[in-house]
Image 1 (cartoon, rainbow, N blue to C red):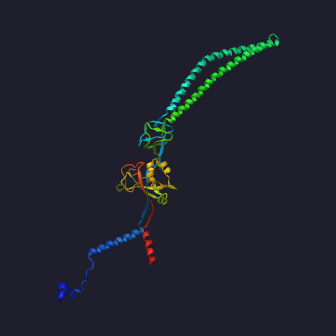
Image 2: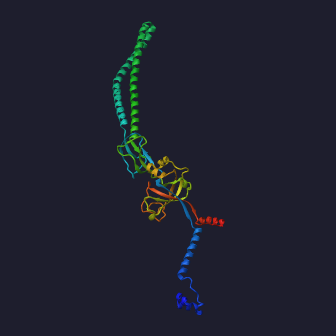
Length: 383
């Protein structure tokens, strides 16, 4: 008894031994526990339902930029020369055919001056020859008329035997000499006229070349993205002076996705686009749709044709040749930018072409339970 009394209190022993307590239910779980258990059950039911009806999006990611028409255009010089002035800066809007730069053409200008000088000399010579030549030509023609009349008269006298044949022959020789002088005079006048026409043709061609080579014109209506030449720079034929994007083309996203993942992308798939200038956590992302997917990975040369920027090409190429994905932006007139965003309105400003962006293409949507069933099947098969 001494040991038992040491281990248990007397009151506890009395409660256990009292027959009046045998019909009282023992409390196993408290109300708080029941609430927790019910909450866990609700969560389990939610998880089961979600695993059946819910969707998990499988995405592939890439990086690129926003562009109008999915490309930009080079404005290049047509000839070699020194840049006199650049008439447009980044951000300016230009029209098709607008002069955006002027290039010095000293060689053509020198040829034009020399040709004009030669033409003036020939015109003066022609004018001088015309004045004197017309007088001489009139004299020759008068002499020719007299000699022809004299030949007719002498021929009649020869027939009558009143004049020798030698005298008639001398008169005819004089007439032939006069006719030769008339022809030479006319030839000189004609030669001067031909020379003037040749010089005028050369001058016109040189002036056209000067007008063409001394200016650089925009080939499209658009916005200047980058100016690559400055005043005083020496340019060669085909040298890029500036880069322009077309304003008539829609704003699109060009993404470059690693080839292994890019092959999963198909036209019509949804794209989530995050411009580098927009905070995703605050405004969400642009909603787009895949328009085209390149059949083969793009090369650095192909990228340069689109981007016109070597550093950007190097960044987007990564370690291997990527797949090019062009996505159109879904319009939404209710937003400040004019495009649909994952949030209600998106940012309060426009999104500009040339902005770097990252994008995620939703290539597949799967139910969560599809990930569990294979595991269950393998477990059942193993057992």
